[in-house]
Image 1 (cartoon, rainbow, N blue to C red):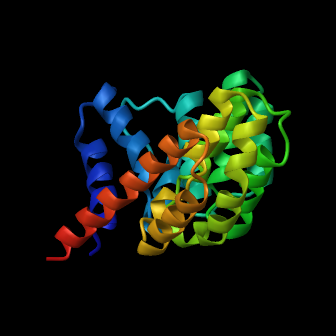
Image 2: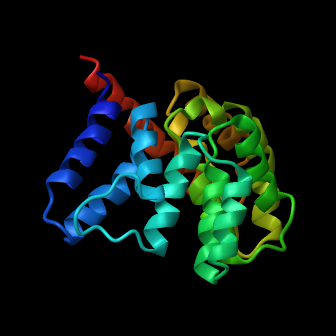
Length: 226
């Protein structure tokens, strides 16, 4: 049993054990959907969303329906058409942001590339959509789908910094960094970029902070393996 499976399964058990209608019950279901990792988990999420599985007192409101849909996108258990249908039912600012995040959550390299391109190759999207796309981009349980984006990321961030507003450039430099990979290869690629880009201190600071996060994650991984 992996730690990820145990964690997700524990959240579902906590949701079932929580007081009916409580905020704790709601939060456990929400985080279970975000951290689902097995076919069993995805089936449970689908059941909650379509009503075939229920918890006493749990209201599946609009926001939670989006959380559940994103969880299914994480497992590639829905389609873009399903997201379009959900957006048609909730075509609000919040719904548009949730749809952008869900589309970016699909766990394939092709989907991650499409999400990356949607915010890097054009500057016409609203700031909130850009931020939510970045959140979905980093939502993975198999980081390998981000590996093809490492080179593209480092080839883009200087141009982004020079061409976008500070707030959006910062959101993209941080949000599109493939931190979930947490690999020595990502550390090496980050250090290589820093070594040949000594200018723009503010941009370097963000990249250094990204690097520090990965190095901390690697130390934790090494400690867990002992």
